[in-house]
Length: 358
Image (tube, rainbow, N blue to C red; front, side, top):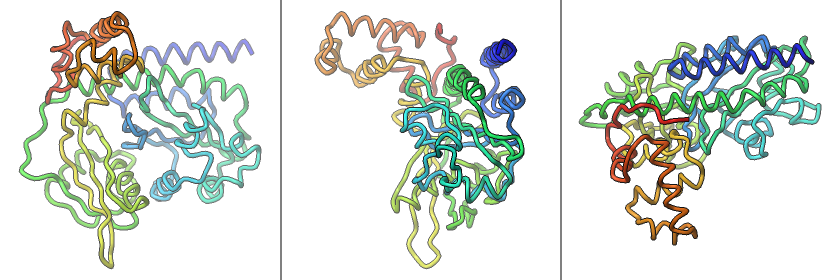
């Protein structure tokens, strides 16, 4: 037991160092993957960057997996009906879950296990949602080969302990991306891509091809499009209507992806990418600054122009309590007034400021 606790302390210390390294998300994922592989005992895994507001995956970094099955994995994740999806784990009130525990020791009850994990030789899977402060910053899945047995309580304990600090580190990468992003790149028209029913790129205009190339993932799947495009297209197809999500490009540009199913014999989904507006980035900015749930509410009303008295009435708080929240918000965001707060959260180009005190 003592040795295991020593390992936990070393892992947590290493996560703290990585959190202060300033690495972009994709590189941070790779470092975390290497750090956790031996302590958690997994043979393959993938990390997903998320739209922090919806929790939908927008990017993928993976190792030891067959990418020919990536589209199937996305389909199983988004179709619902399985207790082991990231959304189901979150809904159940967990940060960490395994196939074995979610199915009460009967993994064959999981569609994901039957159709994806078992055929690949995996006997169990550990999944973590790195949620923190209302933001759904990332998710990860770690697969263990059948011969190595199932994850035990010590593995779950370690996963639980690393979830929050990794969430904080990933929140930091989002804040850095928001603050370092340049103004939206000028474009006469949005970028448009058409995906077929299998998530493969059917056609695209010049702007979309450039964007897809810029967002290319080293672990690209066979569909030929970034994870964010595939996810929003699959969601739109499943819902049978328009779907929207936010995604950050590797160079720090925040985009809004809109997807709509197409009529006709060939079907498919149209995905339109355009620079995220200040209003679309506002929830990201509020979440990334580490505000408490009540501070988030106060900040949102302040950005909308409500007075202290109005905010107190809207949230059923006293005026002094609202003033205390405003003071805390200004401190965490590193600005000196409400006007500066509005400029920070709503500007087309967020200025580069020192990181707020943690």
